[in-house]
Image (cartoon, rainbow, N blue to C red):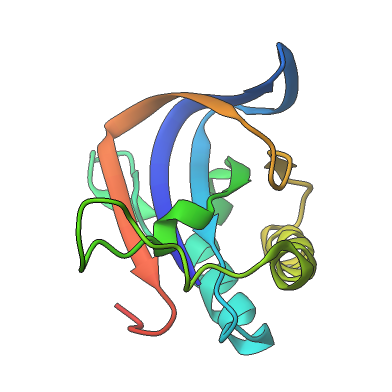
Length: 150
């Protein structure tokens, strides 16, 4: 799994002028799933997202986690995170899972994040053409890949 984690003041997902997901202060997480991903990847990534100390404490130092600030989380599926640009100029998405594999993994990730965070999260709609609006706070953007554990 690959995730782009953005600290936001607020974020919203729109689909055909409808808003399926919207948050205030917290994290917008763009998630890419590949066939090699397992429940272990879900567990590791969920814990990493929830416990990343990227929110400011009272002294202005990034020392608090999403859980500690009781922040919100918006999860959006994004197969293009597994795009490869090794050859040519048109990305190849061969590593991105097909919906039959990715949808159940995405749903498991939602449940794991909610369990780890202790509250419901907001989501986009898997496979939909979404417009994502955000106010990136900082900006703070972290890229995490479960295969590299960085």
